[in-house]
Image (cartoon, rainbow, N blue to C red; front, side, top):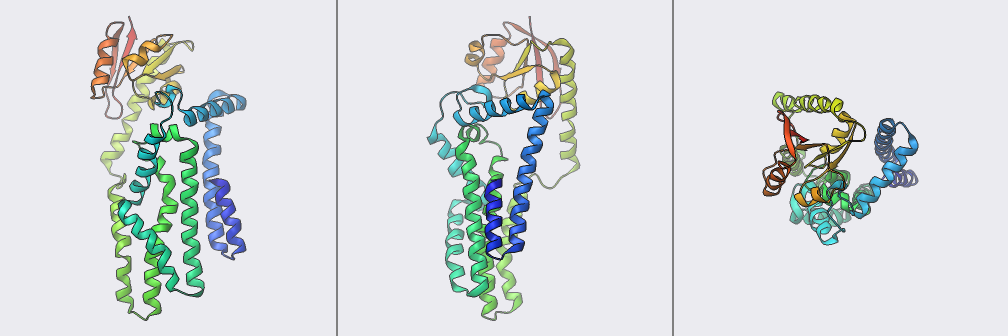
Length: 322
């Protein structure tokens, strides 16, 4: 994505769109800075750049192939599932308006600039083309790491890669209508109605986002401090050779950090039985589904509840081997 954005920036320079070039290069540098910061944190955690490279390479391999249970994958990659939960679902979620209206906007974005002339026409066509390029760039990531996208399809952050391109695709037809009416001498107050769809889409986006930030949401996030305290209490009870398990995969990275031990995600009885070495601690998050209940009953045979981490963020039982 970074190299693609820099390439677009260079293209815009040749097209004499300097401001657009600066914007795209700035976006590219932001993504690159985020990746470098992430790698720096991994290197700091391991204390070695070489180990950080090995960790990222192994992680990328698992995210591509989905052949290990590190990120929730339970076997070979299923492209049919990927197409359903990623290729079809992500664009519909990001566009807010759904697939039907999305196709309408794309069709208008292609057709309406043809009714304009000169600079207005070329600018809108370039903006539409950039939107397509941004979408292609996002999908290249989905294609290169399909297993990771499937495992995280229920979350919202992977869809956000599509936002820059989707914004341009939805904005071009609205701007084209505004400029066509302007060219025909339509009164300004009438042209203002062209931005009604913008207001509707923006309102829908805000309602479906984490906004507004309220005191209740801030208090909910602060509950994470209780989670961190509970994990720190486990640290003196375990050695670096020990490892713990959790029935949710995502918290295991956080658990490794605060407990200074290894961690693995185990969500079913079958996965637990496949472990060659049984974990010293099992952090059981009370998820309301039959598989978790079956796992809890199975763990009661060899584990006892040592403590309960009560909080609103991530409540869990600390279970220790008997």
